[in-house]
Length: 427
Ligand code: GDP
Image (cartoon, rainbow, N blue to C red; front, side, top):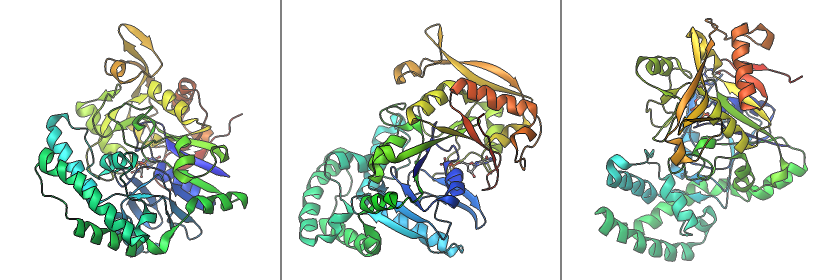
Protein backbone atom coordinates (compact mmCIF):
# COMPACT_ATOMS: atom_id res chain seq x y z
CA UNK A 1 0.00 0.00 0.00
CA UNK A 2 1.33 3.41 -0.93
CA UNK A 3 0.24 6.63 0.78
CA UNK A 4 1.40 10.13 -0.08
CA UNK A 5 1.97 12.99 2.34
CA UNK A 6 1.88 16.32 0.56
CA UNK A 7 1.26 20.01 1.24
CA UNK A 8 -1.91 21.98 0.46
CA UNK A 9 -0.39 25.42 0.53
CA UNK A 10 2.98 27.16 0.14
CA UNK A 11 5.00 24.55 2.03
CA UNK A 12 5.98 24.42 5.72
CA UNK A 13 2.63 22.89 6.60
CA UNK A 14 4.19 20.30 8.91
CA UNK A 15 4.62 17.44 6.43
CA UNK A 16 7.83 16.37 8.20
CA UNK A 17 6.02 15.88 11.49
CA UNK A 18 3.18 13.92 9.89
CA UNK A 19 5.64 11.77 7.92
CA UNK A 20 7.80 11.10 10.99
CA UNK A 21 4.64 10.13 12.86
CA UNK A 22 3.26 7.89 10.10
CA UNK A 23 6.65 6.32 9.42
CA UNK A 24 6.18 4.33 12.61
CA UNK A 25 3.88 2.03 10.63
CA UNK A 26 5.80 2.29 7.34
CA UNK A 27 8.49 0.12 5.78
CA UNK A 28 9.75 2.54 3.15
CA UNK A 29 9.68 6.33 2.85
CA UNK A 30 10.41 7.93 -0.51
CA UNK A 31 11.34 11.48 -1.46
CA UNK A 32 10.10 11.95 -5.02
CA UNK A 33 10.80 15.58 -5.98
CA UNK A 34 12.60 18.74 -4.94
CA UNK A 35 16.00 19.05 -3.42
CA UNK A 36 17.78 20.61 -0.50
CA UNK A 37 16.04 23.95 -1.10
CA UNK A 38 13.35 23.43 1.52
CA UNK A 39 13.43 21.67 4.83
CA UNK A 40 11.28 19.68 7.19
CA UNK A 41 11.58 20.30 10.89
CA UNK A 42 11.06 17.25 13.04
CA UNK A 43 10.88 16.97 16.78
CA UNK A 44 11.19 13.45 18.20
CA UNK A 45 12.92 11.44 20.92
CA UNK A 46 16.36 12.25 19.46
CA UNK A 47 15.81 16.00 19.49
CA UNK A 48 14.93 18.63 16.90
CA UNK A 49 16.16 18.17 13.33
CA UNK A 50 15.95 20.11 10.09
CA UNK A 51 16.09 17.68 7.18
CA UNK A 52 16.55 18.87 3.63
CA UNK A 53 17.19 15.78 1.53
CA UNK A 54 16.58 12.77 3.73
CA UNK A 55 13.02 11.51 4.02
CA UNK A 56 11.44 12.20 7.41
CA UNK A 57 11.29 8.47 8.22
CA UNK A 58 15.03 8.13 8.86
CA UNK A 59 14.63 8.14 12.63
CA UNK A 60 13.28 4.61 12.89
CA UNK A 61 15.45 1.51 12.74
CA UNK A 62 12.88 -0.44 10.71
CA UNK A 63 12.52 1.93 7.74
CA UNK A 64 14.28 2.18 4.39
CA UNK A 65 14.65 5.70 3.02
CA UNK A 66 14.66 6.21 -0.71
CA UNK A 67 15.88 9.15 -2.75
CA UNK A 68 13.73 8.73 -5.82
CA UNK A 69 14.55 9.54 -9.43
CA UNK A 70 12.53 12.79 -9.27
CA UNK A 71 14.75 14.36 -6.61
CA UNK A 72 17.42 17.00 -7.24
CA UNK A 73 20.18 15.13 -5.47
CA UNK A 74 22.93 17.17 -3.88
CA UNK A 75 25.31 14.38 -2.89
CA UNK A 76 27.55 16.29 -0.41
CA UNK A 77 24.45 17.70 1.31
CA UNK A 78 22.91 14.22 1.56
CA UNK A 79 26.03 12.81 3.20
CA UNK A 80 26.50 15.75 5.54
CA UNK A 81 22.92 15.27 6.60
CA UNK A 82 23.36 11.56 7.25
CA UNK A 83 26.50 12.32 9.29
CA UNK A 84 24.77 15.07 11.25
CA UNK A 85 21.97 12.80 12.43
CA UNK A 86 24.34 9.92 13.19
CA UNK A 87 26.48 12.34 15.25
CA UNK A 88 23.41 13.05 17.35
CA UNK A 89 22.78 9.42 18.21
CA UNK A 90 20.33 8.38 15.50
CA UNK A 91 21.15 4.84 14.23
CA UNK A 92 22.66 4.94 10.71
CA UNK A 93 19.69 4.97 8.39
CA UNK A 94 19.22 2.48 5.56
CA UNK A 95 19.28 4.56 2.39
CA UNK A 96 18.83 3.76 -1.27
CA UNK A 97 19.48 6.24 -4.05
CA UNK A 98 17.87 5.88 -7.45
CA UNK A 99 20.31 5.23 -10.29
CA UNK A 100 18.08 7.55 -12.33
CA UNK A 101 18.19 10.47 -9.89
CA UNK A 102 20.06 13.44 -11.29
CA UNK A 103 22.70 15.35 -9.40
CA UNK A 104 22.85 18.98 -8.40
CA UNK A 105 26.28 20.11 -9.56
CA UNK A 106 28.30 22.86 -7.93
CA UNK A 107 27.76 24.98 -11.04
CA UNK A 108 23.97 24.75 -10.59
CA UNK A 109 24.38 26.49 -7.27
CA UNK A 110 26.62 29.14 -8.84
CA UNK A 111 24.20 29.73 -11.71
CA UNK A 112 21.37 30.11 -9.21
CA UNK A 113 23.34 32.80 -7.34
CA UNK A 114 24.47 34.56 -10.50
CA UNK A 115 20.96 34.68 -11.90
CA UNK A 116 19.52 36.09 -8.67
CA UNK A 117 22.28 38.74 -8.72
CA UNK A 118 21.53 39.55 -12.34
CA UNK A 119 17.79 39.88 -11.71
CA UNK A 120 18.38 42.09 -8.67
CA UNK A 121 15.05 43.35 -7.32
CA UNK A 122 13.13 41.21 -9.82
CA UNK A 123 14.50 37.95 -8.47
CA UNK A 124 12.35 34.93 -7.63
CA UNK A 125 13.59 34.75 -4.07
CA UNK A 126 15.46 31.53 -4.78
CA UNK A 127 17.11 29.71 -1.89
CA UNK A 128 20.17 29.51 -4.18
CA UNK A 129 20.40 25.75 -3.81
CA UNK A 130 20.71 25.30 -7.56
CA UNK A 131 17.24 23.83 -8.00
CA UNK A 132 16.00 25.91 -10.96
CA UNK A 133 19.26 25.51 -12.98
CA UNK A 134 19.23 21.81 -12.08
CA UNK A 135 15.72 21.16 -13.38
CA UNK A 136 16.35 23.39 -16.42
CA UNK A 137 19.29 21.16 -17.32
CA UNK A 138 17.31 18.00 -16.59
CA UNK A 139 14.66 18.96 -19.11
CA UNK A 140 17.20 20.40 -21.54
CA UNK A 141 18.73 16.91 -21.35
CA UNK A 142 22.14 18.08 -20.19
CA UNK A 143 21.85 16.85 -16.60
CA UNK A 144 23.93 14.10 -15.01
CA UNK A 145 22.20 10.94 -13.85
CA UNK A 146 23.70 9.00 -10.95
CA UNK A 147 24.03 5.98 -13.28
CA UNK A 148 26.43 7.98 -15.48
CA UNK A 149 28.96 8.24 -12.65
CA UNK A 150 29.96 4.66 -13.31
CA UNK A 151 30.81 5.16 -17.00
CA UNK A 152 34.25 6.84 -16.97
CA UNK A 153 34.82 7.49 -20.69
CA UNK A 154 31.34 8.78 -21.30
CA UNK A 155 31.56 11.07 -18.28
CA UNK A 156 34.76 12.71 -19.49
CA UNK A 157 33.30 13.51 -22.87
CA UNK A 158 30.05 14.82 -21.43
CA UNK A 159 31.79 17.05 -18.88
CA UNK A 160 33.75 18.63 -21.73
CA UNK A 161 30.59 19.25 -23.71
CA UNK A 162 28.65 20.70 -20.78
CA UNK A 163 31.51 23.03 -19.82
CA UNK A 164 31.58 24.48 -23.32
CA UNK A 165 28.00 25.74 -23.15
CA UNK A 166 28.11 26.74 -19.49
CA UNK A 167 31.28 28.74 -20.08
CA UNK A 168 29.63 30.82 -22.80
CA UNK A 169 27.01 31.91 -20.27
CA UNK A 170 29.57 32.47 -17.55
CA UNK A 171 31.76 34.60 -19.79
CA UNK A 172 29.22 36.69 -21.66
CA UNK A 173 26.12 36.81 -19.47
CA UNK A 174 27.41 36.64 -15.92
CA UNK A 175 31.04 37.75 -16.31
CA UNK A 176 32.21 35.14 -13.82
CA UNK A 177 35.08 32.63 -13.65
CA UNK A 178 34.84 29.75 -16.13
CA UNK A 179 34.38 26.08 -15.30
CA UNK A 180 37.35 23.78 -15.51
CA UNK A 181 36.38 20.36 -16.97
CA UNK A 182 39.15 18.61 -15.03
CA UNK A 183 37.84 19.95 -11.73
CA UNK A 184 34.31 19.01 -12.65
CA UNK A 185 35.38 15.48 -13.43
CA UNK A 186 37.07 15.29 -10.02
CA UNK A 187 33.86 16.52 -8.42
CA UNK A 188 31.91 13.76 -10.13
CA UNK A 189 34.45 11.12 -9.11
CA UNK A 190 34.13 12.20 -5.48
CA UNK A 191 30.33 11.86 -5.81
CA UNK A 192 30.81 8.36 -7.18
CA UNK A 193 32.84 7.39 -4.10
CA UNK A 194 30.22 8.75 -1.75
CA UNK A 195 27.05 7.49 -3.36
CA UNK A 196 28.27 4.21 -4.91
CA UNK A 197 27.23 1.85 -2.11
CA UNK A 198 23.67 3.21 -2.01
CA UNK A 199 22.75 3.21 -5.68
CA UNK A 200 20.17 0.83 -7.11
CA UNK A 201 17.13 0.65 -9.36
CA UNK A 202 14.75 1.99 -6.72
CA UNK A 203 11.74 1.72 -9.02
CA UNK A 204 12.29 -2.06 -9.32
CA UNK A 205 12.85 -2.23 -5.56
CA UNK A 206 9.56 -0.43 -4.93
CA UNK A 207 7.70 -2.60 -7.41
CA UNK A 208 8.82 -5.69 -5.51
CA UNK A 209 7.96 -4.06 -2.19
CA UNK A 210 4.45 -3.29 -3.44
CA UNK A 211 3.99 -6.94 -4.49
CA UNK A 212 5.07 -7.99 -1.01
CA UNK A 213 2.45 -5.72 0.57
CA UNK A 214 4.94 -3.34 2.14
CA UNK A 215 3.73 -0.06 3.58
CA UNK A 216 5.23 2.79 1.56
CA UNK A 217 5.04 6.55 2.17
CA UNK A 218 5.76 9.18 -0.45
CA UNK A 219 6.90 12.44 1.13
CA UNK A 220 6.31 15.64 -0.80
CA UNK A 221 8.24 18.86 -0.48
CA UNK A 222 6.62 22.32 -0.49
CA UNK A 223 2.92 22.44 -1.41
CA UNK A 224 0.29 22.69 -4.14
CA UNK A 225 0.72 26.43 -4.65
CA UNK A 226 4.40 25.98 -5.49
CA UNK A 227 3.70 23.45 -8.24
CA UNK A 228 5.03 24.70 -11.59
CA UNK A 229 1.78 23.85 -13.42
CA UNK A 230 -0.92 24.42 -10.84
CA UNK A 231 0.75 26.89 -8.48
CA UNK A 232 1.40 30.61 -8.52
CA UNK A 233 3.68 30.51 -11.56
CA UNK A 234 6.37 31.86 -11.87
CA UNK A 235 6.77 32.12 -8.08
CA UNK A 236 6.86 28.36 -7.86
CA UNK A 237 9.44 25.66 -7.45
CA UNK A 238 10.88 23.75 -10.40
CA UNK A 239 9.49 20.26 -9.76
CA UNK A 240 5.93 19.14 -9.28
CA UNK A 241 4.82 19.18 -5.67
CA UNK A 242 1.72 17.07 -6.33
CA UNK A 243 0.97 13.54 -5.16
CA UNK A 244 0.39 12.53 -8.78
CA UNK A 245 4.03 13.25 -9.46
CA UNK A 246 4.86 10.81 -6.68
CA UNK A 247 4.21 8.01 -9.16
CA UNK A 248 6.74 9.47 -11.59
CA UNK A 249 9.33 10.69 -9.10
CA UNK A 250 9.34 7.33 -7.30
CA UNK A 251 8.76 5.18 -10.38
CA UNK A 252 5.61 3.37 -9.23
CA UNK A 253 2.17 2.83 -10.82
CA UNK A 254 -0.15 5.79 -10.14
CA UNK A 255 -3.00 3.46 -9.14
CA UNK A 256 -0.95 2.17 -6.22
CA UNK A 257 -1.28 5.50 -4.35
CA UNK A 258 -4.26 4.75 -2.13
CA UNK A 259 -4.36 7.64 0.30
CA UNK A 260 -3.33 11.21 -0.30
CA UNK A 261 -2.86 12.90 3.03
CA UNK A 262 -2.74 16.60 2.40
CA UNK A 263 -1.20 18.62 5.18
CA UNK A 264 -2.87 21.95 5.75
CA UNK A 265 -1.76 24.46 8.38
CA UNK A 266 -4.34 26.19 10.62
CA UNK A 267 -3.06 29.59 9.43
CA UNK A 268 -0.98 30.60 6.41
CA UNK A 269 2.71 31.18 5.91
CA UNK A 270 4.83 31.50 2.82
CA UNK A 271 8.45 32.06 1.92
CA UNK A 272 9.62 33.83 -1.18
CA UNK A 273 7.78 36.27 -3.36
CA UNK A 274 4.37 35.88 -5.00
CA UNK A 275 0.71 36.72 -4.42
CA UNK A 276 -0.44 35.88 -0.90
CA UNK A 277 -4.00 37.10 -0.57
CA UNK A 278 -4.58 36.54 3.16
CA UNK A 279 -1.22 38.01 4.16
CA UNK A 280 -1.03 40.09 7.34
CA UNK A 281 1.58 42.61 8.36
CA UNK A 282 2.99 44.56 11.29
CA UNK A 283 2.57 43.54 14.90
CA UNK A 284 -0.27 41.12 14.10
CA UNK A 285 2.03 39.20 11.72
CA UNK A 286 5.05 39.44 14.03
CA UNK A 287 3.13 37.90 16.89
CA UNK A 288 1.84 34.98 14.79
CA UNK A 289 5.34 34.47 13.36
CA UNK A 290 6.89 34.41 16.84
CA UNK A 291 4.32 31.97 18.17
CA UNK A 292 4.03 29.90 15.00
CA UNK A 293 5.36 26.42 14.26
CA UNK A 294 7.71 25.19 16.92
CA UNK A 295 9.83 28.16 17.90
CA UNK A 296 8.68 30.61 15.26
CA UNK A 297 8.03 30.70 11.54
CA UNK A 298 11.49 30.95 10.03
CA UNK A 299 12.67 28.93 7.01
CA UNK A 300 14.21 25.55 7.94
CA UNK A 301 16.84 25.95 5.18
CA UNK A 302 17.40 29.69 5.02
CA UNK A 303 16.30 31.01 8.42
CA UNK A 304 14.30 33.62 6.50
CA UNK A 305 11.26 34.99 8.34
CA UNK A 306 8.15 33.56 6.72
CA UNK A 307 5.36 35.79 5.46
CA UNK A 308 2.26 35.26 7.58
CA UNK A 309 -1.46 35.24 6.92
CA UNK A 310 -4.84 33.99 8.11
CA UNK A 311 -6.14 30.63 6.97
CA UNK A 312 -7.24 30.86 3.36
CA UNK A 313 -10.09 28.52 2.46
CA UNK A 314 -9.93 29.50 -1.22
CA UNK A 315 -6.27 28.56 -1.59
CA UNK A 316 -6.63 25.48 0.64
CA UNK A 317 -9.74 24.14 -1.12
CA UNK A 318 -7.86 24.42 -4.39
CA UNK A 319 -4.63 23.08 -2.89
CA UNK A 320 -6.45 20.01 -1.56
CA UNK A 321 -8.35 19.42 -4.80
CA UNK A 322 -5.31 19.59 -7.00
CA UNK A 323 -3.51 17.10 -4.74
CA UNK A 324 -6.39 14.61 -5.01
CA UNK A 325 -6.83 14.65 -1.25
CA UNK A 326 -8.40 11.71 0.57
CA UNK A 327 -7.52 12.99 4.07
CA UNK A 328 -6.55 16.37 5.45
CA UNK A 329 -4.06 16.59 8.31
CA UNK A 330 -4.79 19.96 9.92
CA UNK A 331 -1.67 21.13 11.73
CA UNK A 332 -0.36 23.72 14.17
CA UNK A 333 -3.84 24.38 15.52
CA UNK A 334 -2.41 24.88 19.03
CA UNK A 335 -0.66 28.06 17.93
CA UNK A 336 -3.95 29.93 17.47
CA UNK A 337 -4.88 29.54 21.16
CA UNK A 338 -3.76 33.09 22.00
CA UNK A 339 -6.29 34.82 19.76
CA UNK A 340 -9.64 36.22 20.95
CA UNK A 341 -10.90 36.29 17.42
CA UNK A 342 -9.59 34.46 14.36
CA UNK A 343 -10.12 35.89 10.89
CA UNK A 344 -10.41 33.38 8.04
CA UNK A 345 -10.22 34.29 4.37
CA UNK A 346 -13.28 32.69 2.74
CA UNK A 347 -13.37 34.45 -0.61
CA UNK A 348 -11.40 36.56 -3.06
CA UNK A 349 -12.74 39.80 -4.41
CA UNK A 350 -11.57 40.25 -7.99
CA UNK A 351 -12.92 42.99 -10.25
CA UNK A 352 -15.71 43.67 -7.75
CA UNK A 353 -16.86 40.05 -7.66
CA UNK A 354 -16.36 37.52 -4.91
CA UNK A 355 -15.17 34.06 -5.84
CA UNK A 356 -14.14 30.95 -3.94
CA UNK A 357 -12.23 29.53 -6.91
CA UNK A 358 -8.46 30.03 -6.86
CA UNK A 359 -7.50 31.86 -10.05
CA UNK A 360 -4.35 31.82 -12.21
CA UNK A 361 -1.59 34.21 -11.19
CA UNK A 362 -2.53 37.37 -13.12
CA UNK A 363 -5.98 37.43 -11.55
CA UNK A 364 -4.66 36.25 -8.21
CA UNK A 365 -2.50 39.34 -8.01
CA UNK A 366 -5.65 41.50 -8.12
CA UNK A 367 -7.49 39.51 -5.43
CA UNK A 368 -8.48 41.09 -2.13
CA UNK A 369 -9.36 38.85 0.82
CA UNK A 370 -12.92 38.51 2.07
CA UNK A 371 -12.60 37.76 5.77
CA UNK A 372 -14.95 36.13 8.25
CA UNK A 373 -14.11 36.37 11.91
CA UNK A 374 -14.54 33.34 14.17
CA UNK A 375 -14.34 33.38 17.96
CA UNK A 376 -11.09 32.07 19.43
CA UNK A 377 -10.85 29.49 22.22
CA UNK A 378 -8.28 31.31 24.32
CA UNK A 379 -6.52 28.35 25.82
CA UNK A 380 -3.73 25.87 25.27
CA UNK A 381 -4.97 22.74 23.49
CA UNK A 382 -1.67 20.86 23.55
CA UNK A 383 -1.92 17.48 25.22
CA UNK A 384 -5.56 16.92 24.21
CA UNK A 385 -5.95 13.55 22.45
CA UNK A 386 -9.68 13.32 21.80
CA UNK A 387 -11.59 15.52 19.39
CA UNK A 388 -14.52 15.87 21.83
CA UNK A 389 -12.14 17.29 24.44
CA UNK A 390 -11.22 20.28 22.29
CA UNK A 391 -12.97 23.53 23.28
CA UNK A 392 -16.19 24.13 21.38
CA UNK A 393 -14.86 27.19 19.53
CA UNK A 394 -11.85 25.19 18.46
CA UNK A 395 -14.05 22.41 17.04
CA UNK A 396 -16.14 25.09 15.35
CA UNK A 397 -12.99 26.43 13.69
CA UNK A 398 -12.03 22.96 12.44
CA UNK A 399 -15.54 22.26 11.16
CA UNK A 400 -15.80 25.70 9.54
CA UNK A 401 -12.56 25.08 7.65
CA UNK A 402 -13.61 21.56 6.71
CA UNK A 403 -16.92 22.79 5.31
CA UNK A 404 -15.22 25.46 3.22
CA UNK A 405 -12.42 23.31 1.83
CA UNK A 406 -14.70 20.33 1.20
CA UNK A 407 -12.26 17.57 2.22
CA UNK A 408 -12.35 15.55 5.46
CA UNK A 409 -10.01 16.62 8.25
CA UNK A 410 -9.15 13.24 9.74
CA UNK A 411 -6.08 14.28 11.75
CA UNK A 412 -5.47 17.35 13.86
CA UNK A 413 -1.95 18.14 15.00
CA UNK A 414 -1.79 20.12 18.23
CA UNK A 415 1.94 20.20 18.90
CA UNK A 416 5.22 19.46 17.13
CA UNK A 417 5.82 16.03 18.74
CA UNK A 418 4.97 12.61 17.33
CA UNK A 419 2.17 12.05 19.83
CA UNK A 420 0.57 15.47 19.44
CA UNK A 421 -2.20 14.20 17.22
CA UNK A 422 -5.96 13.84 17.38
CA UNK A 423 -7.56 11.30 15.04
CA UNK A 424 -11.00 12.16 13.94
CA UNK A 425 -13.26 9.51 12.54
CA UNK A 426 -15.60 10.66 9.89
CA UNK A 427 -19.11 9.40 10.67
P1 GDP B 1 7.26 20.91 6.37
O1 GDP B 1 8.28 21.41 5.41
O2 GDP B 1 5.89 20.84 5.76
O3 GDP B 1 7.65 19.63 7.01
O4 GDP B 1 7.12 21.99 7.52
P2 GDP B 1 8.27 22.67 8.39
O5 GDP B 1 9.03 21.64 9.09
O6 GDP B 1 9.02 23.65 7.58
O7 GDP B 1 7.40 23.56 9.38
C1 GDP B 1 6.55 23.05 10.29
C2 GDP B 1 6.96 23.56 11.67
O8 GDP B 1 5.88 23.41 12.53
C3 GDP B 1 8.08 22.76 12.30
O9 GDP B 1 8.84 23.60 13.13
C4 GDP B 1 7.34 21.71 13.13
O10 GDP B 1 8.07 21.23 14.25
C5 GDP B 1 6.18 22.50 13.59
N1 GDP B 1 4.94 21.77 13.79
C6 GDP B 1 4.40 20.77 13.03
N2 GDP B 1 3.17 20.45 13.49
C7 GDP B 1 2.95 21.25 14.56
C8 GDP B 1 1.84 21.44 15.45
O11 GDP B 1 0.81 20.80 15.35
N3 GDP B 1 1.98 22.41 16.40
C9 GDP B 1 3.09 23.17 16.53
N4 GDP B 1 3.13 24.09 17.49
N5 GDP B 1 4.14 23.04 15.71
C10 GDP B 1 4.06 22.10 14.74
